[in-house]
Amino acid sequence: MRLIAGAVTDVGRVREGNEDSFVIDERIGLFAVADGMGGHQAGEVASATALESVRALTAAGRSVHDALVAANSAVHEKAGSKPGLRGMGTTVTAVTTGSDGRVTIGHVGDSRAYLLRESHLTQLTDDHSLVEELVREGRLTPEQASVHPQRSIITRALGVDAAVEVDVYPVEPAVGDRILLCSDGLTTMVSPSVIAGILRREPDPTDAAERLIDAANAAGGEDNITAVVIDVVDDGAAPVEPRTTVMAAGGAPEPSIPTDATAARGNSRRPRRRAFRGFGGGARRVLLYLLPALLVIGLAIGVSGWYARNTFYVAFSHDHVTVFRGVPGGLLGWDPTIERRDELTRSDLTAAERADLADGHRFSSRDDAEAFVRRLVAGYEKRTAPTTTATASTAATTTVTATASTIGGASSTSAPPAPPTSKP
Ligand code: MG
Image 1 (cartoon, rainbow, N blue to C red):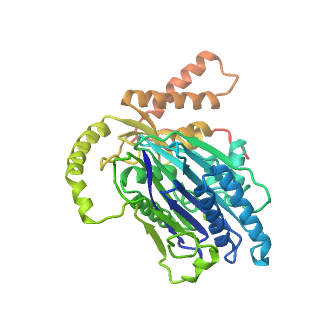
Image 2 (cartoon, protein in one colour):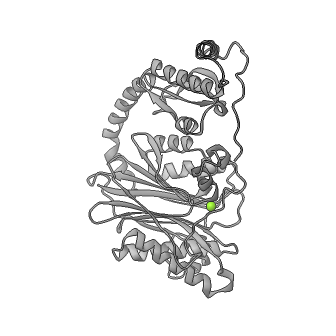
Image 3 (cartoon, rainbow, N blue to C red):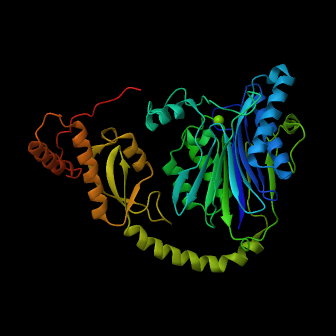
């Protein structure tokens, strides 16, 4: 098995310059994204310097942990060398594959790694950001964090101090897995469920990266956006040359890492967006793969159609707990349909329940999905019921309200009492 990737970085719709960088080096098995900070081009220097260092150490066979520690020193030393670079720093989230096939993620900051496995998206990395730490401490909900004015403040970065703590995550890759590395310009603009839908729909890694950037720009594009989409493929599949692409911030694509990150900025007439195909080659290769692919696609559409019509999930629709038929984000053109929208709303749920429904909680039958919603309603009733109520009357109330709240959208019933709100 091996990893192939496509990546796109984009300045977004608000910022003047792009301080994000990425590197794809299939030959040494390195894929990374970095989001620099510092202003006046210092952020661009920081992210490019960090990835240059990570790449050199990875090529020398060092672990991703050591590579990020060395990158920290490189950025820190450079920051001390020029007044204009003082205080610069960068996030780095890097995937490396060892010669033993082991995949490891090294991570500092608030860029992210996600794993899409069997259509399910999981965030692999923890953000080193102020709001995420407050969420982990239970002082903010994920919803509050997503709109928090301080959501871009990071609590750990490469290059700011002489030492840095690096998070390391081992990954057991399987063929068919897809890993996404992205800067916060994507995740602050686009929800995980939308990201998951795009990753499921777009088979080509570069196309997927393009669509993710489109989604972030459509939502406002308030920051630089970078997406690196990595597919775990069979060794026999897609026999192409290993590819190396380095995208230093602010520069044009370089065949190799520039020795001085600022040197890359000399090519100032760069396209606004830079994308790199994971697959080289032209029409010949495409045609070769087209026939069996068409057969597989035809079969897949038939099977997925059956699957989509016989699968259910519970998620939010207009903030109401809703039973859907289908697969979150759709499956090969089969879009989910709403079966029933409950009166229970997002704010009636606990943080854990909201997180559970964020990407859709799946069931193999409508009965199971309905039973799950009834449990959510019962949990809500229990939390909001007066503690002095006798057992019998609580049961009666629960039954009545549960019945009322299972009525569809047509009839309006009185809203249940508001849940207690906890201020962070
Ligand atoms: Mg950013």
